[in-house]
Amino acid sequence: MARIYDTFIAGDPVMFPLLGLSIVTFACAFERAWFWFQLLSKEDRIVHDVLAAARLDLAKAANIAQKAQCFTNWSFFICAFKVNSAYS
Image 1 (cartoon, rainbow, N blue to C red):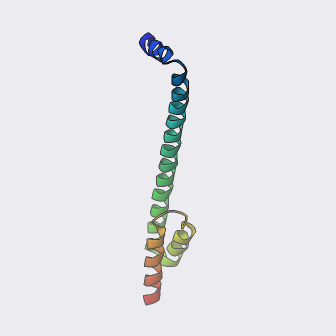
Image 2: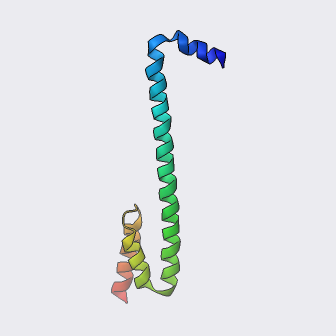
Image 3: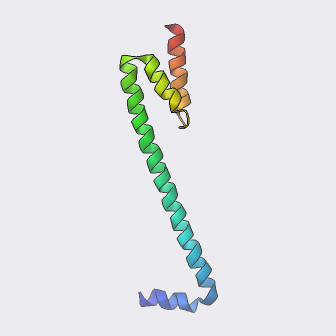
Protein backbone atom coordinates (compact mmCIF):
# COMPACT_ATOMS: atom_id res chain seq x y z
CA MET A 1 0.00 0.00 0.00
CA ALA A 2 2.85 2.36 0.74
CA ARG A 3 4.24 1.76 -2.76
CA ILE A 4 0.96 2.89 -4.37
CA TYR A 5 0.92 5.98 -2.15
CA ASP A 6 4.55 6.78 -3.03
CA THR A 7 3.79 6.41 -6.75
CA PHE A 8 0.76 8.65 -6.39
CA ILE A 9 2.75 11.35 -4.60
CA ALA A 10 5.57 11.09 -7.14
CA GLY A 11 3.10 11.91 -9.92
CA ASP A 12 2.57 15.38 -8.46
CA PRO A 13 -0.44 17.38 -9.66
CA VAL A 14 -1.19 15.11 -12.61
CA MET A 15 -2.31 12.27 -10.33
CA PHE A 16 -5.16 14.14 -8.62
CA PRO A 17 -7.29 14.63 -11.76
CA LEU A 18 -6.52 11.04 -12.74
CA LEU A 19 -7.73 9.83 -9.36
CA GLY A 20 -10.89 11.93 -9.61
CA LEU A 21 -11.66 10.75 -13.13
CA SER A 22 -11.03 7.14 -12.11
CA ILE A 23 -13.53 7.45 -9.27
CA VAL A 24 -16.11 9.01 -11.64
CA THR A 25 -15.50 6.22 -14.18
CA PHE A 26 -16.08 3.49 -11.60
CA ALA A 27 -19.20 5.28 -10.33
CA CYS A 28 -20.61 5.50 -13.87
CA ALA A 29 -19.83 1.84 -14.55
CA PHE A 30 -21.55 0.83 -11.32
CA GLU A 31 -24.60 2.97 -12.15
CA ARG A 32 -24.91 1.45 -15.65
CA ALA A 33 -24.56 -2.06 -14.27
CA TRP A 34 -27.30 -1.33 -11.72
CA PHE A 35 -29.54 0.11 -14.45
CA TRP A 36 -29.18 -2.96 -16.68
CA PHE A 37 -29.73 -5.32 -13.76
CA GLN A 38 -32.98 -3.58 -12.86
CA LEU A 39 -34.13 -3.38 -16.48
CA LEU A 40 -33.49 -7.04 -17.19
CA SER A 41 -35.13 -8.19 -13.97
CA LYS A 42 -38.24 -6.10 -14.72
CA GLU A 43 -38.32 -7.39 -18.28
CA ASP A 44 -38.07 -10.99 -17.09
CA ARG A 45 -40.98 -10.43 -14.71
CA ILE A 46 -43.10 -8.89 -17.47
CA VAL A 47 -42.35 -11.79 -19.84
CA HIS A 48 -43.53 -14.19 -17.16
CA ASP A 49 -46.72 -12.14 -16.60
CA VAL A 50 -47.51 -11.91 -20.32
CA LEU A 51 -46.98 -15.61 -20.93
CA ALA A 52 -49.05 -16.55 -17.89
CA ALA A 53 -51.87 -14.26 -19.03
CA ALA A 54 -51.65 -15.59 -22.61
CA ARG A 55 -52.50 -19.08 -21.38
CA LEU A 56 -55.85 -17.76 -20.12
CA ASP A 57 -56.77 -14.66 -22.15
CA LEU A 58 -54.91 -13.19 -25.13
CA ALA A 59 -56.58 -9.80 -24.76
CA LYS A 60 -55.29 -9.49 -21.19
CA ALA A 61 -51.81 -10.55 -22.33
CA ALA A 62 -51.90 -7.96 -25.13
CA ASN A 63 -52.91 -5.32 -22.59
CA ILE A 64 -49.96 -6.20 -20.34
CA ALA A 65 -47.60 -6.12 -23.32
CA GLN A 66 -49.06 -2.77 -24.43
CA LYS A 67 -48.32 -1.27 -21.00
CA ALA A 68 -44.73 -2.51 -21.19
CA GLN A 69 -43.85 -0.77 -24.47
CA CYS A 70 -41.09 1.25 -22.81
CA PHE A 71 -38.93 -1.88 -22.87
CA THR A 72 -36.98 -2.76 -25.97
CA ASN A 73 -38.44 -6.01 -27.31
CA TRP A 74 -42.11 -5.53 -26.54
CA SER A 75 -43.10 -4.35 -30.00
CA PHE A 76 -42.60 -7.94 -31.21
CA PHE A 77 -45.00 -9.26 -28.58
CA ILE A 78 -47.60 -6.64 -29.40
CA CYS A 79 -47.38 -7.40 -33.14
CA ALA A 80 -47.86 -11.10 -32.42
CA PHE A 81 -51.00 -10.38 -30.42
CA LYS A 82 -52.34 -8.08 -33.15
CA VAL A 83 -51.80 -10.76 -35.81
CA ASN A 84 -53.43 -13.41 -33.62
CA SER A 85 -56.45 -11.23 -32.88
CA ALA A 86 -56.87 -10.41 -36.61
CA TYR A 87 -57.29 -14.10 -37.39
CA SER A 88 -59.65 -14.76 -34.47
